[in-house]
Length: 185
Image (cartoon, rainbow, N blue to C red):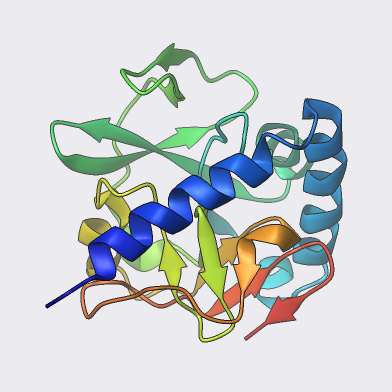
């Protein structure tokens, strides 16, 4: 009997409950701490083309981070079309449109030259110190990530980083995980 799906759902609910204990200001401050650790990594410093997500309000906030670095790096954000994750360039002049999930997605041409991507910065509900990631359960990243060979960096708040989370063979492991106080690789 496979209880992994139930264990994943239970953990999603637990993390969601923890997140509600923080104000938006708390999460914004914690986001800055996470991103300041990320900025120190060699993989980020050397990366030119970066796939990054546009954060939902309960995730590490990435929007101002993208604008901070856009003069030096090219950022691409995901757009969900049907069941596929596509990527579009994001700059300060990019127009955004709200998705069915409430995420602001960039409007523009699809970027498909995955060989040029130096780093993927990926959100998650939870991560563990064995490099596993628990997403929101829709499978978009799990379906997309096998198409790309670049380093995968999960970013999260400290309370989302656990010793072990439920994982199965379809879950894609991260190469790096960054929280406010930890860098794992």
